[in-house]
Image (cartoon, rainbow, N blue to C red; front, top):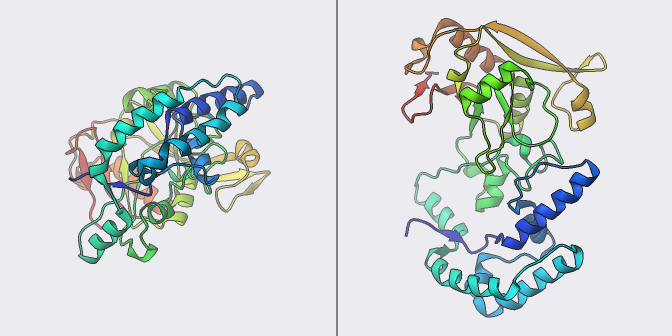
Length: 330
């Protein structure tokens, strides 16, 4: 079949989601809520790091799965008074899942490296932004894995030198879902307008995303980590109705310009954002297909982002449709 599931992939169970919700409730009581999706991602990674996780290979070799599963859940009953779970019912459910999943399970490390050796094209898609990376993001307001380029190597089992092209995807403005510092956030009518026109609501939770001006400090930092070959700048059309657009070009802290994106959230919360203001274009860009089709002010905005980030922009999204894309030469 076309879908292959790694036998090394860790399983996320319903009990991980329950634990995620209970932990977030505990944090909320102390004012330290992270704003997770409560889908169990963090607890599943905790199980992995604690070496108590169950993998797809364990599920397919089902004989020992029930005992491992009971041990994994046992500690949750001890830890949380409110924890309730039908362990035996869940085991039976996964017995059926094992039968359905078995034809799709493969040694994907071998599979992907064979494909590379055969000269086949491999496209790897990341699901989260670099600022949500467990190590390089705005910790602890991050996801539980490495969302930067290193995750492609550790997730697939491919060597770094096998990555030929790294494409950065960034919106023409900045968004964030959940808690955490957001220096360029717009808590005003402009932010609301960006959210409405850009349909900025979380894919998993439906929560409204926080919106702000484009942050070149963030994207420079991301480019430093990922070394983008080029960028895909999306949702330029969302800015079509604005009289002016702003770009965050630097952060200042205690009167000094910071050289890069700070690790300390306390510093990040207190930075003064240095903006450049550019004139808007006040016209519809959704029908543009070449760079010259864009209005002059929109072209200037794109070129300035290239200068500030230090990476060329090759594709520019101007609408929701697959065809709504400008390809920029050079």
